Length: 277
Ligand SMILES: [Zn+2]
Image (cartoon, rainbow, N blue to C red):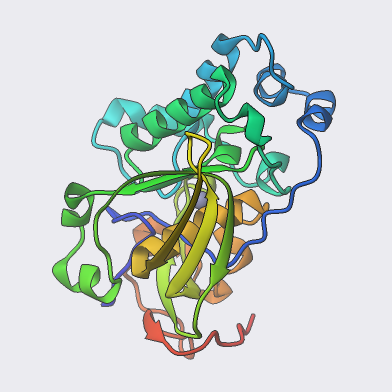
């Protein structure tokens, strides 16, 4: 059976997405005024003197993106209860750009630290700030030899998956390259317990800024490109379920059961196929 997986390596639980245009324009102040959650307001406020405690508490609970579906540490599974779940407005609205002059602020640096911590604790291969209830355009991702070891050699090969060091990207702009795509099962901690086939581009280019405030540009293929697409989708207010092949949606427990007749199969394809509901 073809690989399963979600974006992460999977122990199964990942996700992905496709191009994303991270819109911006709205001020952080807008979110501050509109937000009903004290801690979210704190996280998105114009900064000065932002109490670190509320933000830290909630951010740490939130969770990573492409979770594997199971944690190395059973006790940490409880963090899932604090991860924003589908239906929460913060997951369905575009995130706001981080003003460049604020990247070096304690507030933004703390958000990044907390995102990385949560991603690694779960563990997951990626996380977007909105999943922690912070509507800012920040993503973190990382894939390691250990995570990859959880997948079969066959899966790793077909997914074109290679380890890469931690990436922190602020205000990412993603462009797909070429016409080649692939379909694999994805999952998301914000749609906990489910998976579905999602077709995504095999190659992307991303520009943005690092946590040091310097511009960055990178190209990615295979699984790394999928993670980037999934994370950038979060910043556009999209979840994988917005792009999945609907009839392949299933619980994690049913992941390996046969696909319905007529459903496209997992694997590399050439062009994005029209999705029949
Ligand atoms: Zn996700």
